[in-house]
Length: 108
Image (cartoon, helix red, strand yellow):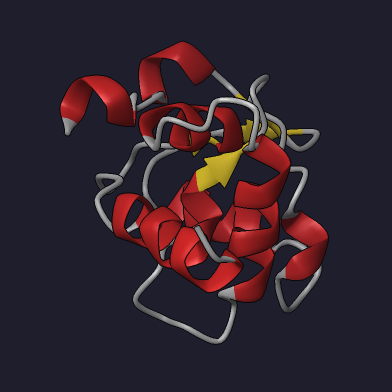
């Protein structure tokens, strides 16, 4: 699978994350059958910031930390986008992470 093809498969899943939910890089990788590719999913999310159709702000690390926030324009844009969907964030950590977590493997 080429990098471009992998990235597009990541984007297909990311586009399906429901409003008010988040998922992790690893959960997307697992749903694609490439469980050890979480870092590659992160690269895909970083590469899509010019695409408004992909809700990259809804993809966080496995502990609910906003590790990709420095890739968004503005200091707190990722946090602001999540908060606008009703997700509370304190110190770059999603509060009630399990409540907001969406598992693509189970939902797709």
